[in-house]
Length: 478
Ligand code: SF4
Image 1 (cartoon, rainbow, N blue to C red):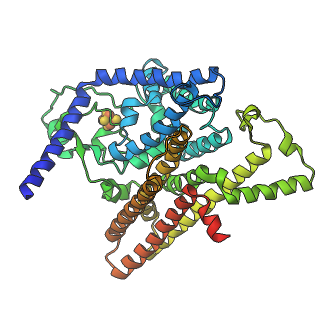
Image 2: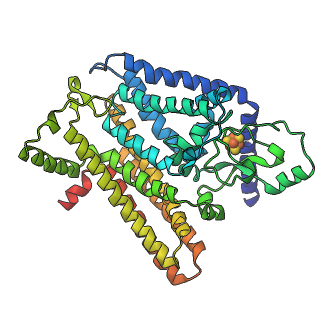
Image 3: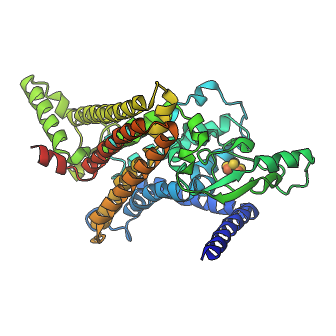
């Protein structure tokens, strides 16, 4: 039995290794796939803007605007996110149209060195929040104009950055892409990665080994391959497979990167902020604000104030669609009042959720021993499974809504959502427990800190339950 298991494990390892070789040997085909995706992507963001908005007779199969909406928000977003957890950043390296365009343009651009402002580590958080909030303001999930502004604007920025900075590189992807931070975090869970064998690398160097097929490979996202111990920065493009006999496409235990000593040393404040305030806070708020009873109450409060003070321009001002949703022909208009209330609701909710979870980690950290920011950031990483599960389900709600409007109901949907949230909870508690276990030998400290951490994870679970079933908590507390 044991021998059989060993043989199976070896077969799987060989299969993964062969997949790595296949990717290296088929770079030309990967280029064809990439440019094919660019053509489809540009068609789907540009053509719907030129068409009239769909009426009631429009369906996914007979209306390009609805088809594009389904591809972008029903398939692309949720499943690209899921792919990060399952196979790392393969999307970035093989399919992403922005990556392809920025790298191609940088081949013929100015080639300037990357300035300091681009390397600011807070960009992933700021860009994620900016895109999420703006997307809600203009209803990006519903209309083609905002899709062109948000996705097209991001693509244009990727091209400009590619033209100005780097030579044959993906400066945009590494530093400025609005989803780079989220992808970096989720890829830490991936069971697939490029493993670098330091001894083999050194031996190859000592031998003066130059007989390497990919001796001049180009790592577009500028990973220092020799020192690579994380799947976060790697776009899984396959170009460095086999380099110096030291780089191999390999399997690892999912989440092992988070519990590793490397993760402990490489923690940073901005990852923590993105997890607590970006993914847990803002993303969970953005998925449910429109159907929240608390949002409706807050809006009522603001509306009373507006009418009491006779500041009616706040509800009558005509705001362009690229600032706030404005489609009167579809009875879909956001007034300035709606916009302000939404921003307040998202802002306060984000601070409350992020602050509460930060407090939970603070207590856990304090119980373990003397203060350490590094330890707190390491604990925050263990919340990635739950954050990822919640964001995936939030995006998957769009898939189910779009299918529902076509008369297709997904069976056992609520059970599926509960299972995914449950897996996220279990994953976070398991990783948190493992990290805490490695941090202190003291049994009492271990027990108390695991209890504090588990409570924090359950609060985070409650946040997602409120986001995915927004009527539930207000009903319980009313
Ligand atoms: S580290 Fe290797 S596989 Fe990863 S992006 Fe760079 S060249 Fe591609």
